[in-house]
Structure formats: structure tokens, C-alpha cells
Length: 341
Image (spheres, rainbow, N blue to C red):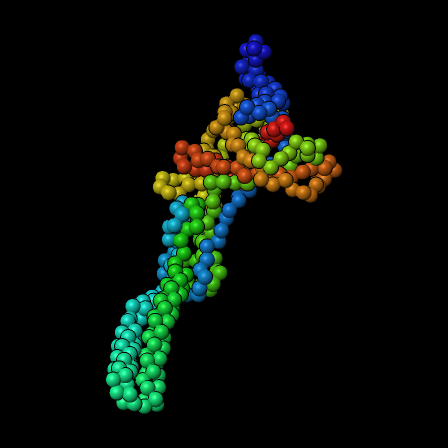
């Protein structure tokens, strides 16, 4: 009611926002205390160099341009695997061979039949075969059993060898471990690489991390799991809050942080050419994260005030052009929604 009675629309809404931020509010049916952070910095949470586990020559690097979005499971790099592929084919053939097993089964069956015949002959006519001859027959049976057992074991080892060769072959191809942007290409098809040599760098922009500092006096209100509001804002002049126009990217800049052309290229930069006045900032500019770390170390700031650092995981969002809105290092404000307990 107070806001409606004020004369100027912009001043009224600005004052209302300030009042609302300073008052206790309710989240999910539970009262919260809004705590303004003294500092907040956005950081990339997951950035992974993609490399090969084996040495070899690259035959495929995909993509070859920076700023391309790739999906989890998409092939990124492939090395020349002709030799190991031939070894896999040979191991697969050996694992299916049953000749030795069949030969051992025939030999054992022959030995068992001879043993049975001689034992029956001794029953019908005692002494037909001497004890030495019977021991020889028994040894032939044991030899046949051992050969069959070894043949089965050899087949099992051949199957294990096939699995090893297949695992080695898989090391020559690397797939994307998550959805993300290729933010650096360091090697190309034809380059020789050693194990661990970075070929591409894959960056996950779907979830960022905010490093937030709050005054030590609020320590009793801070808990892991509490929500944190992150606003894309910057200060200009006498404290007016607005989002700045994005600068045009340099020609040699990383495409992920520049303008996004049509196709799969894109990045988290803001749409250039506009600025939002204080009354134009909407809920679309607010991101909600959760505290996942309360640093046990307390440190003083430049004024010697004691500060607590919080780690906050913040889900990112894309604009209508598919560009992620939050970027590492961009100016943001943070408000901790500390639940009353």
C-alpha cells in the first residue's frame, strides 16, 4: 500500500525492492532471514581436459572449433587403432576355438573305454591284465582328464585375453563425459600424443559455483543446504542497479564467451545492446543455489572484519538463444536465505 501511494514509479519500486530484501520472508512455508553477502564470485565448477590414455597418432578430433556444444557420450578424439584392432580380432578368434577341448574329450573317452574293457576282462578272467597294465590304463584316464581341464582353462584365459584387448582398444577412443562446451582445442588430426596430453578442454556450464563471503556475526544462522539468491547485477554511478550491455567479442576471443551465431555454437554472454533499469530487473535475473560448503577457516577482509566463505552450487539457465546466463567472474550479488531454526 505504501508503494502505491508514492509519486514516481521507478523510485517507488526501487524502495519496495530494498524494503523487501531487508525484511524477513518465507520460503517453502518456513521463515527465513535474508543475509546480504559482502562478496560473491562466480566460478566454473567442472572443466576437464580431454586426453588419451595411450600414445599414438590422432585420426579424429571432434570438434575442431572452440565454442561447440557436445553431448555426453559423443566421440571427441580417436587415435590410430589398426594394430590393436587386429590383436582384438585375433583374440576373438582364439576365444571361440574349441578344437583342443574336443580333442581332449575324445582322448578321455577313449581312455575311459579302454579302462572299462580291461576291468571287465579281469572280472571275467582274473589275471587277464596285470596290475602294471591296469595302472597304465588308469594313468591314461587321468592324463585325458588333465588335458580336458587344461583345454577348458586355456579357453577361459583366451576369453579374458579378449576382454583385455577390447579394453585396450577402447582406450584409443574418448567420449564426452558430460554435456558441455569445448573451450579449447590443443591438438588436431595428425598430431602424435602421449598419455595424458590435453587435446580438448570441455567445460560444463549447466552448474556453476559461487564463492560467497558473509560477516562472521551471521555464523549461527548459516547451514549447509540453505538457499542463496544470486542476482546478475553491477553497480553504476550512485548505486543504481542494472545489467550492463555486453561488449562485442574480439576476433581472437574464445567463441563461448562471445556472440552466438546460429547452430550449436553458443556461450553464456548476455545479449548485447541493452541495459535494464532498476524497475526492469525481474525474477528472470535471479538464480537460486544451495550452500554445500561452509569453510571452517575464518579470514579478515581488507577492513580486518572477520569473514566466512561459503561454497554455493548454482544451477545455470540458458536464454532464448541457448546461451548460458551465468559466467565465471561476472558481477553478481548474493543473498543467503537463512532458515529460522
